[in-house]
Amino acid sequence: MRQFALVILCLAFWAAALNPVAADFNAYPQFAGVDNFVHELFDRMGAKISNFNVSEPLESGALKRYSFELGFTMSEPEKIPELIRELEGFQGSDIALRASSMVITITAEPRRNGRVIVYSVLNAHLINVPKAEDASKSFPNDMLTAIFKTAKFEPAEQTNSKLDAVLNMKRRGKNDKIDIWLTNLRVSGEDASIQMLGYANAFKTIRSAADGIVASKAAVEVAINTISQTSYSKLPVLQFEALASMKKMNPRPEAVFAGIEGIIGACDTVPGVFSGLRISPAVTSESGDEIPMELSFNAIEDAQWDELKGKLSALTLNGSSLANIGELCTGGKEGEKTVSVTLAISK
Image (cartoon, rainbow, N blue to C red; front, side, top):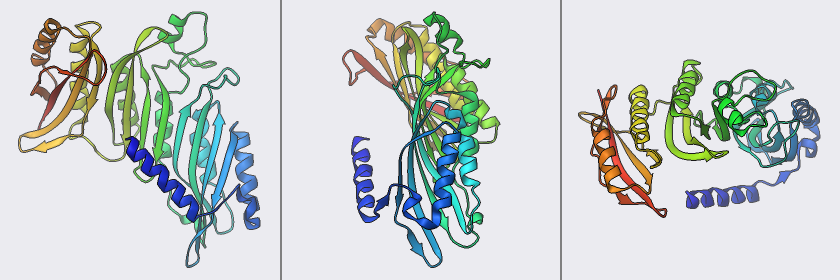
């Protein structure tokens, strides 16, 4: 991953060298209306722009395409889908604005009006061509809207009791209960997907949120990539990474969720040892589909593993079964043990 990130960074610098950038659209007098519109829109949404870079246009016949990047902070990230809708709704003569990708990350900055601050980087482009308003929209804004209905960047209402703050997880000024809070979102228009990083108080809440996103028709599937046990305000919570996508990733998502839930439930019967679960992409075979997984444990004793292995082998799952339960191996962290398992999905 680090090598991949380095390659992306190098490509970004290379692209920047090829395409000089301007601070904003003020460098292009013909787009003065666009510049005013963008600044007024972000100001109205409570978004503070920290950087605004516009690349030299790519030209093809009558088409001119200006890529631009906007970095901004705000305390109400759930307004971002509305911001994108208004941005892409800009109406100008032969001009259209289209969002392509975005990263939203929680920051450690002091709260603004009692709310946490997020930093976002929006990549978009201005299309200058006759009938520009007909340009397609790829940014999965409906998916982002659906995610914000089930998860927030606000972890908890600030109360005198940390226990109440974690267990209730009520957003300040709202009555809705929050069981999932986010730390990072990566939105890709090219892949029509959103990668989520966050925390939940239980796996069933992650599954419920995933079901809600899919039920909204904004995503075809939400797949879990990793689950790990950690703590928040000294209370146990689950940290997770998931991917919402308009593409189908697993043959039977409900069977995968049932398998993960069964594995975590079995691990919970041996308190204090479960550390994490990593889920790999499905492998198709003649008999069905197999999903390789890796379980990790903290300071698990041989007797505890024998007990847990027996429970994993005896699991009765809906539409799947555990196969090829391996032996404990030394993990990458001090005191960590790992074991490979395969979730077999029946056809």
